[in-house]
Length: 197
Image 1 (cartoon, rainbow, N blue to C red):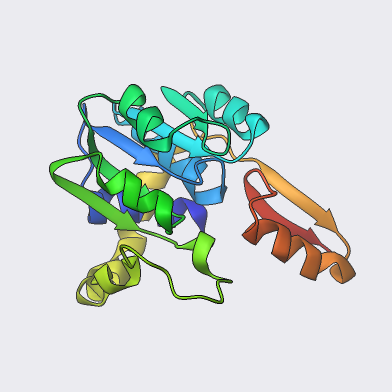
Image 2 (image 1 turned 30 degrees about the vertical axis):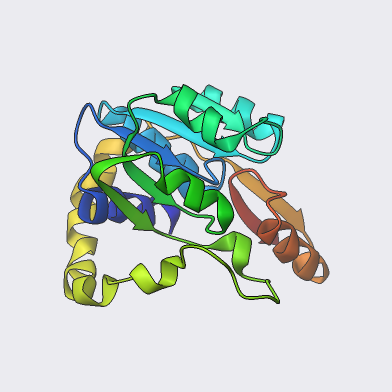
């Protein structure tokens, strides 16, 4: 679930601490939106990037400190520097591709990255250039602790009840599932994509 993914990524992978600065891409998605809200509850500065002005408005509604439309900024590098001139302690990666290479250059020394997804590259037909995040996936070493996380999350998630907002992007009809799935991969949804049958 997006909530478990967010909690595990923030608490176990990033070990996010109060006062740190977090960058989240695909921040208006199911996981990214929860990640940003939990980070705010923990007392962190949160910067989110999204692919439409409607998504940016949603992030501001959720309390993100800075949100921007990566498709309309003149320079992603400048947008990231303006949002956090001192750099980023943590990066919750959902997108991959060239924009992530730019984000990596904004990390503070000893910054931490949680690779949750690489959605911009899932349907690529040509090999990616630059950083290939899947080569950094060392989660197999943490698999035993992940299996134990359900107990941890059972304790942590009730603390968040009533504090975290979730939006659902509902598509009606099983026959519309392929289009809805492709729309999710192309970033057309805000929040959790759901098919109602």
